[in-house]
Length: 465
Image 1: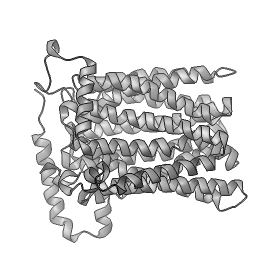
Image 2: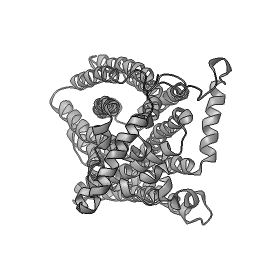
Image 3: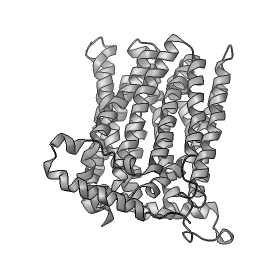
Image 4: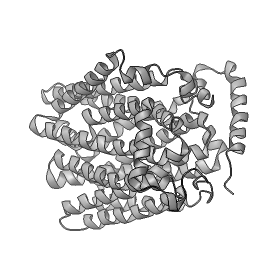
């Protein structure tokens, strides 16, 4: 028998009562402190959190190593963006399959098998780096397979979260996940930069290979019967509709749920028009005149800003207007990207202030993205029934892969035609202008579904009402 959520919710309720009783005596900094409740009260969440943390650190190291190697082989930001396209295409295939599997099969098993297959992908990159002349096609193939394996397992991981913790603590869990992710994005690039500068690309991939091999072992610690599909939640296997029909159900839910549709569209606009990660190697080498360590610092800068937000995420417990925060963060993201382009142009013009302004503004983008992502993730789970969470999570992840990939491609093309600074200025301005225009429309979906979203529909305690 699969355990129900009753005991978990009772434990959380007791913790909530204790915290609410102490709230009047808390200082303002205590109210901002990171909520560790999900880690303290859910052993299953702790197991998943540890596995996810190791995975995120490995991926962060790998991202810098691949970008640096591709730029070193091709001397082109377009190829760096092309690797992102390969990752997104693999993710598209994997998510189409993994999203439906997550709604009808054992999510624990899907995660374990997906992350075990990922170990083979890292082994291909490591073996390729040992060659006298590493091949670019092998890197493209490995990133395609990386997206495939990640796409299969990621919807199951995302859809599993509401099974481990009650809805009113999804934002706290999202903040903890953001902390893990941003620590990885901060430390991972620094580790990668140090290994690339002092040792070799092969050693960098070897470190990632060890981390990737640990993840499926850690996922195996999850309780075996906790993430099985609900009995009666869907049709019997003999009556199950086709995969295309199942995805139509997920798309129908997104289309008729204005909150989720706006969240997906807003995130896509941010990533599509204001992508910056594909330009990091060119910014570090050609603009800032640095080596792999400088590239590592640039990749780490957004993570530093995001880490500050994650560590002070206690405000999510009292958030009254979650939609307005998401919109404000999207506008801040676009403005920071545009100003980063101005700073990069200043460096090219010989102005010294741009050298420190670029990483500072990148840190601001990390703050805006993480504050928004904590709330967006909670809203997505709250507004999606469990029987559809795999497919809706798959759509969320799909735009999360495709948006940055296509945004990186357009930024790489513009940087090749013009310069990295002009590419960032154009993208950031376009992002900000589009969101501001949609918000200014009185009867528009953004204003109706997100701007007016009340506390009862957000990630705080009112989520259960």
